[in-house]
Image (cartoon, rainbow, N blue to C red; front, top):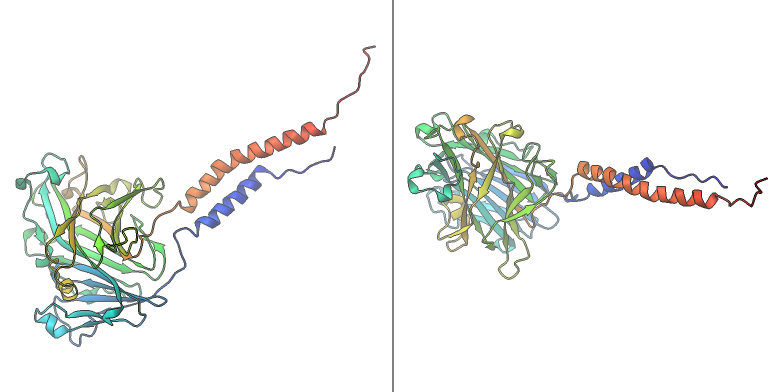
Length: 406
């Protein structure tokens, strides 16, 4: 019988692992890059108080993304996409600072603008969750404290925190109430040259068409011992916004432990609902400490979007968008019944992406695919090569002739 060398099971498992690992590196992480630059108050000769805007210019192959992170009145993040690699932001500072907002912010040439949107943080709600339901939509008006109108906050100078190398900036603000004597509301903005993932939870997956905002409450004094918070967002878009937030599910929680969902609110052309022009995306989780551990995570929920009859209270948004532009609003509520109240840590953070085109979607991570390769590949190899070995062994046996007993 000829001696046949069979490849070992670990060898085939290794090959399967190598193929899956190599393939997984290509899923969701394209090589597309943009040339990103950042500037503060473009075109302004002398600094002014309370009217700051950070402009990020992200140039691709034949197009440009303009992100504008704005601190005048309610903080806002605007996105403008053009089909020109030479488009620019033009601000009429004299008109804007005199309160003549309309038309004082443009992206030129105006004919190059393909899509525009804005997300504005308008209100911070606080309610007394005395029955520990964490469900403000079913509470009476008496459970709510007067909301904090973010348009009335005083915002810090953006020049103090802007990082031109990392394309990031942090904005903190407060009002004159006792609740904010030692506390603040902060927003951290980041833009990206290429695909990647946030280094801290929730580890959102981004690409070169994305920007990220992280919002947190730090050391705000609550108005009751059972206080919980909710955040009101208003969104403006040059395209139709879907009247619902899509919730997608996954079975991989490696980057955001215990979270198997991602929520996204997208804009589409009115005549092509399947085409996505822009999005706001988040994972339904917030964190109760600045350096969170697993037990510091708390779920969050969103309300259904509703139409709003006027533009949000942001001077920069009113400077760019015209009256009659579609505006929608929703609330993000934090915590669930049984979770600690805000005063346990006096901290709460939440993150979101704002970007162009379809939102980036998580695929199985290399670690999960490796485990699947070993878990599924080993039994398969045992069956295949065990069967092959049995056939070869049986084929190698020769029947013996008749042998007499005596």
